[in-house]
Amino acid sequence: MEKEIKVWLSDIKQAISEINQFLPDKKVFQDFQKDLKVKRAIERNIEIIGEAVNRI
Image (cartoon, rainbow, N blue to C red; front, side, top):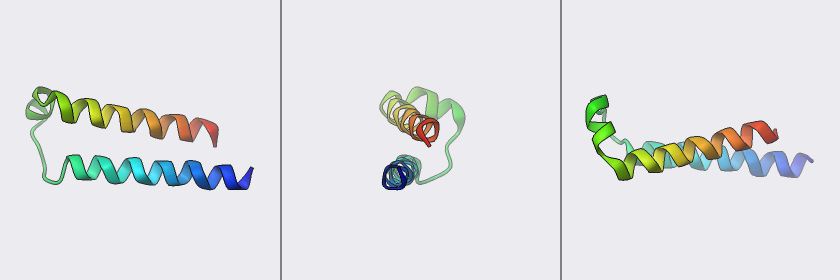
């Protein structure tokens, strides 16, 4: 179980890192909403974080 938790924590860390890469600078929310690729990528990473937290 401890090994699985480490994997899930690693997944969370990776997802946060990817979100930071997609948003290197501050954005206006309206600009974010218009950028479908970035929006979908960030949404997916938030899903990954949620799934990992639920498993922990």
